[in-house]
Image (cartoon, rainbow, N blue to C red; front, side, top):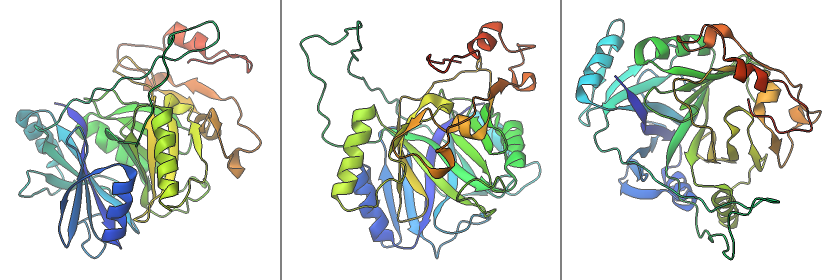
Length: 346
């Protein structure tokens, strides 16, 4: 029984027209507009749904504007039925006229499940990359990107006090996997039917991390694009349109290896262009990171909390290893030995 990705997200925003205009500039395709709702559709047939803050999502404990519900797509009707049986053991479900079963996960995040029979495969290509002594593109220039066009929603991030309980619930009921952990900060969690590094990051509301004050709220959503060029073209376009600029600029996370560019969204939280993330399957062994070391390899505009540089601190926790491993593979352990002048590939 397999959850195969984010089928839709439900925003609650104060200014519907402003947020719709933002997402059109951001590169999403408008699919439906009504007085009380705006929908965007991505190439994989997932949806971004905007509704007014005055129309709350039942059961959500999240404060303020932003995503108040995430709906997970399931591969078959039979698998959906089995997952619904698990959820229904101790909580109410509500079925709507679009086939979404709504519930509230432990930790207070509103979620849904739906048979995602409309899902489309997304296929992209990247230009060959040249480096000293490694020529892969001869007598050819790189493609010139006109606009950023997100392909799908890779992950969503919520700040909640009961982040550990939420992960335990998702692992037990929906078979979600732990991808990596940032010590005391949160869990990176992957849906079992995807190869994304993570589809959900559960951020500890009591971590004391800058900007986190114990309040349960939406943090950001990641929209996957092809490469660094597309990220930068999208960033430039949004700035030309007059939208608020990114605080950190472009960077590359150490956890997931992904390129990132976060920008403030007028309907709460941030939106992230992301590219070149790690891909995982069930052979992956989760890692346990110091919170600052996991944050980034580099970032254009260094935040205050990272100005002194991170402590090199990452390990494997044998308890997190897949069942077929008694201990992390020796080769993976060897990869943790590092020299700061060398490239590290754990």
